[in-house]
Image (cartoon, rainbow, N blue to C red):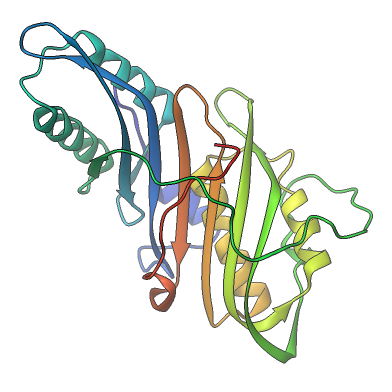
Length: 248
């Protein structure tokens, strides 16, 4: 049931090869997980899945939903068996070790300066336009910018994908108006969540001269799942405490 999608083709489109400029993971929140114990009694749980960004494949979301639904009638001896089975199957699909934990991160508001209240005109909604991005090389800062206005579209179904995004960086000060216009330019764009975040990360790195960078998008839930891709330069990869957006 699980359907792998190779990452290489989409990465090649934005000029990435095997030497990735980031580390990270795709963190999935699972709200609808159930199975039967050895005696046939129904069990339910929530879970968090960690798929490494370095894996050769991402996991297609609808196939993951169908896979998890297939466990509803499966008899399994213990919760540890459930976790082990999911981890093994997802690792085989992704081509790298996937970590499975029961439970979900807490809900919290993103820390940082919101750019959503800026007063400006916007008239470009796709394709993503990196030319909107500007930074002041004479003003070096370390800050976190956040927006709840990221929207893209599923390339399979055309359904809207809504997300909040956090951008933590050190380097030339990013022009906030240009950044908001850039985020709005994803509005009519069709690409998987993970690919959007990698495009966003790379555009910021190339056009704004960020010395250190951390980008996370927290997409709203669909079919009992939400996806939270995060990409970071190595120096910003640690010290991050996962959380869920209030819209999730």
